[in-house]
Image 1: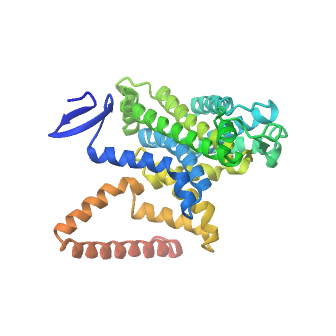
Image 2: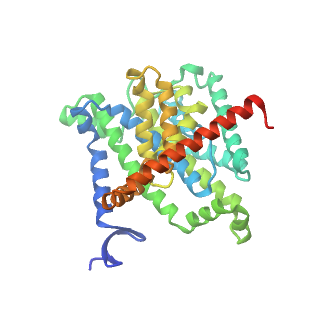
Image 3: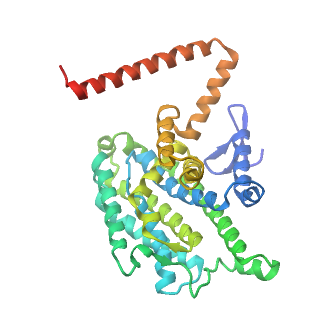
Length: 388
């Protein structure tokens, strides 16, 4: 037996690294996902799908993966993660506009550094708080940062900053220039495709890093903190310090995503990257994809960005569409799109074997609707007439 193959419960598992064992089905799904990611430029060129929207969705999804690290394991809800996304984006814009840095690699390092420092400061100040106080504090810091950038001449107010130096795009390790000089590729196409594949590589690395964090002793300690903070402290876990570290790590994800977003857009304005609604969207992406999954936030990011960017061309009341989707997720898919898939698959299998279960489903749905209607009528009656 190869060191990459292990026997577990009578089945052969693939072990690409220590602690990570995949069944044959999981290996196939993982490979299909990676192939699909690398094939996005070809798929979008052959279909009506938008390459730019999918790229943006992946970047916001990466920020949601970072937020999910905090949400899933410490059960702390942050309404301010756009601060780190915006810090990464503005880190790139400031370096290119004010200091004429044209290397995409250095710009991305700058984005990570700015987001890390910001996450360290905010994380230190909020790590000791819980529930609504934690959420409101993160929201407040996000709003303060947004207002500061919006009113600052250094950041060019609402007009924002360009990411071009002398009118040229940043260099992406020279790969985009090599494609233009050697293969005669259109400069815009070469830049966009190089940046996309760079994004995919970074995304895969960050997913592996996330998996390693989640399955490390540190990740187990975060789980303990999320279950019961007092008990975790009682058994010797330095709770505030661990929450601070987790908060900083989640902010770094946002900084990387924001830096790549700035390289993609080539212009950074406050509203698309720092506004508090962006924080809500990042949180929604994690919930939509499934907070109990590793790649769910990426799927949630792509789906939500598609809805936000393109629904206006197809639906008149497109603002209501995202609300309806959120309602459907809460009531029908409480574990998110990917998180609910195993339950749906198991349920379909049971009903295929025993069709009489469908009759019970109809009865259950009817009873549930009647109960919810009764509660709604009772609530309205109490609001109008008060409690008797």
